[in-house]
Image 1 (cartoon, rainbow, N blue to C red):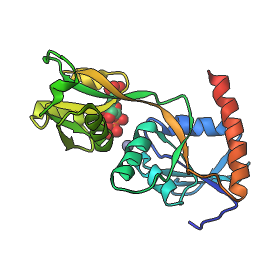
Image 2: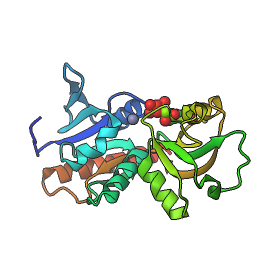
Image 3: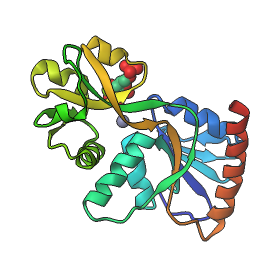
Image 4: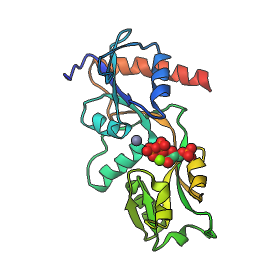
Length: 226
Ligand code: PRP
Ligand code: ZN
Ligand code: MG
């Protein structure tokens, strides 16, 4: 895709929990699109604001690389990848522009129901499975706790039953997945929701005016929903 700098390109989740509400929120800002045949790119009709439909985990990187200008993504994903950049000595390449008020969830530490929970120090020397290693390491370090971080990309909640880990650190929405796996939440590391992510610096071309217009409409749409 050409780097057309007279249009704004927004990355949103292709499918998953944030996909439909993200699109509905942008539509409520007066945007409409013509879909491509592969349904991965939506060409903006009412305004020069296009959508790219991608995996949510790819959104921060697409902004960092300048492939997309903005993105709608969970704060959990944005902060995990931001912290990963910090850990590896890279500069922050994006920031949260707005909280969008949907897709709320928590990044929690959960332990087996049978544990008699005494507090964070109980995690010392334990193995904690997670898909959020950078955020978990940052938290453990701040607490002065030495624990093993076991990286899993999904089905984290099953790790304790499989003997792969003692505890987990994963997203909790309704809590149903935790209960189904005989786990209980004991600590919250992050309150998450869908956010509009963008570059650290403002745009210095026509995209700046488009982004300002979009932000004004978004703020109006978010206010109406509250
Ligand atoms: C998310 C999250 C938890 C679950 C929590 O997974 O990773 O596993 O939802 O929701 P609950 O508290 O309502 O049960 P998701 O189903 O989105 O799939 P993923 O882990 O593959 O992203
Ligand atoms: Zn994902
Ligand atoms: Mg899951």
